[in-house]
Image (cartoon, rainbow, N blue to C red; front, side):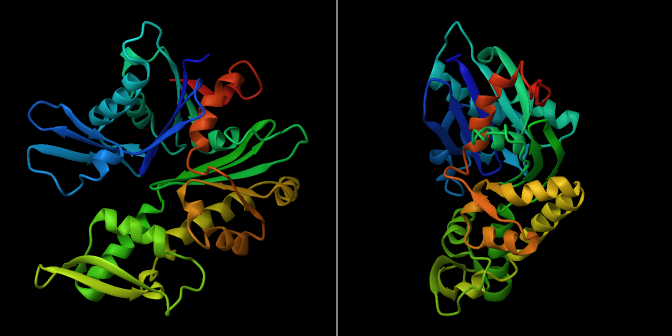
Length: 333
């Protein structure tokens, strides 16, 4: 159906793809609205650039925290605006499949469900995030291989062992790479009395962070504010200084991957060793993360061409399984 939609509502970005288009919308999970009227001022990238720069009359807010919708009314406005721009006030409404995390309670799933305007959806389905990541890659299960899917996003990590028969084991934790942003910002305050904003912290992470042998010679100029004088300042730090303590959240992610591996049968591990670990999500773009997992697990890690959008593509592809092998993993909301 050309009216099918796959949605992955992430802590950092929301990804939406449509059956009739090869293009996937990737936008920050941020919305700006007027406080008095509730009128939308901006969504996605436009709203993200407004963070910390608006008058009191405009609210700019992230709608998702650690994988869970923190403000479902604003998130409903965000998703509704995207769907309206795509479909308008069409008589025929789309089917929507929405990625969720296995740690979610029934109440949190209900909040996710309420994030979609009933007026703009015909039917709503749920699919596990890490399983959707596998489906989004169009992997062939016919040879009986088992795959370990690791999707590391901004606020969550979703891990699944998947075979032709479905999900053998899965786990989600509320740890993602946005914690690295916080660690960088806190260290700058603690070590240098230097204050930076969220946007600067994220850019610094993407530009400077590595998990293997950070350099003392590679320098980065950082613009922010001196806490004592409250005046603008430019601070120059080495890559090694910037990367201090950033492994703390990543080690927990790797420990969870190892926990999953130790809890499956030897035959599955042997099969997994051949197929490798499939790493998706924004963390796969960070230098050294792939190598860190390989070192700790002794399993080759495969990265993919579009790691950020594959879960949304998987949600879109899930409709073909409604009456087939994986129908139990595509749940009516």
